[in-house]
Each structure stands twice: as structure tokens, then as C-alpha cells.
Amino acid sequence: MSRDSGIAPTRSNLLAGERRLARVSKGAELLRRKREALVAEIVRLARPAADARALIAERAARAYPVLVRALGVEGYAGLRAIAWPLREVALEIRPAQVWGIPVAEIVARPPLRRTLEARGTAASAIGPAAAASATEFETLAELLLDAAPRELLLQRLGFALTRTSRQVNTLEHRVAPSLRREVVRARRTLEEREREEHTRLGWLMRGRR
Image 1 (tube, rainbow, N blue to C red):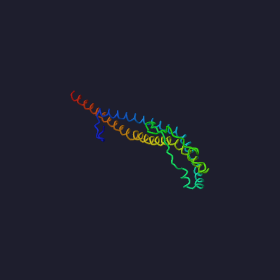
Image 2 (cartoon, helix red, strand yellow):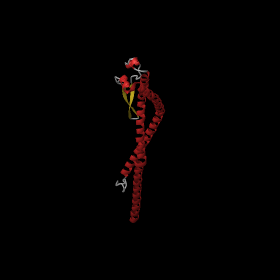
Image 3 (spheres, helix red, strand yellow):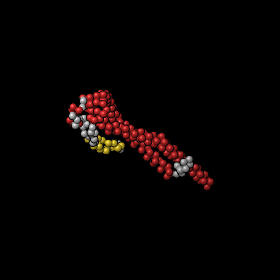
Image 4 (cartoon, rainbow, N blue to C red):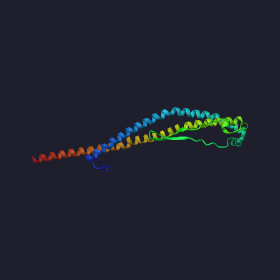
């Protein structure tokens, strides 16, 4: 819409530029609202996530010393023998979306904590240290599975918030100012042409008199 940009400062280009500027302003406003909603969602999830992390850290601090004691009693090979056969944990996962962000929810999972009978191990074959270690780590695994969907959601919300903030900044600080300058230049050029035309017509009218 200006000589600098190579776009002719015409009335149609001025109107088109004003429409683009209005769309950019509306888009920036919608993105600002999305950013506010993302921040609110992150704040809502932050406390439960922090509590879950604290509980996981506390449980891990309890589980690893128990594992060290079991290793001291049974040895690495002994614990591997007790742990055999490996167990497959089947999870039912459902895809979901939060603010257009794809996430996953664990709909159902089997209980991980088991009794000695459920492990299929004879009571005489496993010492109390190994049994306590298994129980501690099964509990820790349950906490990790429960926290995983929330952690994934928080991570993706954070990425979305960063991307939305960049988009808002681009529209507000680059696209909108550039369009606004073009609109102002086009309007000034058209106003100057109108004044020149009025002056020329004035001289023509005087010359006819």
C-alpha cells in the first residue's frame, strides 16, 4: 500500500489493509484469551502435580534403601530369580484433547501391589527384605502411573503456552505494527492526492474565470 513496499496506495488496497489489520487484532485477542486459559489450566494442575511429585519422591526415598537391604540379603541373582517370570501390565488408554492439545488418559489399569500368593512365589523362597522391596516398588510404580497422564498434560500445556505466547508477540509486535504503518502511509498518500486534486481543480476553475 506504499511506495516503499511496492503496493500501490489505492482506496481498495487501503480498505484491504484495514480489513487485514482488523483480522490480525481479532486473532491476537483470541490468542490472548487462549493464553490466559492455558495459564489457568496449568495453575489448576500445578498443585496436584507438585503433591504427586513429593509423594513419589518420598516413596522412592523409602523404596531404594529397602532394595539395598534386599540386595545385601538375596544378592542380585537371587532377586532376579525371585522376580521371574516377568509380569506384563496392560493399560487401557483413551486419547483426549484439552484446548486442542492431544493427551492420553489411563482409563483402567490392574493393581500392581500383590500378595505373596499372587506373585506365585513360595513364602519359604522369599525373605522379608525381598518381599518388602517388591511391595515398595509396586507402590512406587502405581504412583508413577497415576501421575504420568497429568505430567504429560502439564508438559504439553507448557509447550502450547510457549507457542501461543510467541504467536501473540509476533502478531502484536511485528505483523500489526507493519500493517498499521502501511495503512497510515496509504491513507496519507490518498489524502495528499485529494488535496492536490482539489488544488488543481481550484486553479482550473480560476483559470476559466
